[in-house]
Amino acid sequence: MALPENIYLEIVTPERHLYSGPVDQVTVPSSQGYLGILPGHAPLLAELGVGNIQYQSADRVDRLFCSWGFVEVLPERVIVLAQTAEPASEINIDRAEQARTRAMQRLNSKDAGIDYTRAQIALIKAINRLDVARHTQSRSRA
Image 1: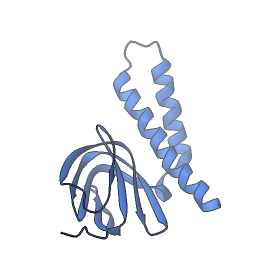
Image 2 (image 1 turned 180 degrees about the vertical axis):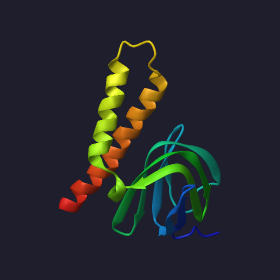
Image 3 (image 1 turned 135 degrees about the vertical axis):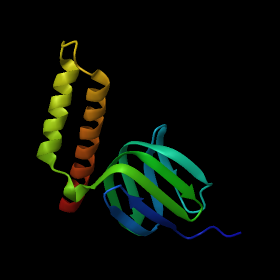
Image 4 (image 1 turned 120 degrees about the horizontal axis):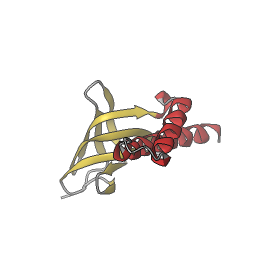
């Protein structure tokens, strides 16, 4: 049996549909680490973590931030059901920087009432949002 030439990718959140179309490869953040997916990948169901989804078609590479949810992988199709997802163009860098600063302040605080797990998650989200936005900006300038 011949491998498919590309993968049909769908990315959705509870609020909206972000992407549908054929791609050459996809990388998603699972709860256990990043998964690289090529056409013909073995079937898989995984929990999404916090990070960046990257997908490539020909010479075009797109990235977006996502957090939590699930990814279903079939040899010819990938469906990402994310709790939240944001394309780079929608990420407010100033707001993400402020969120990063607040999370770092909470983590460095001596206050016993601080929820450190929540602050760590907020920091990881802010760092990943900034990574997506800055990576896309630096590519568009080149």
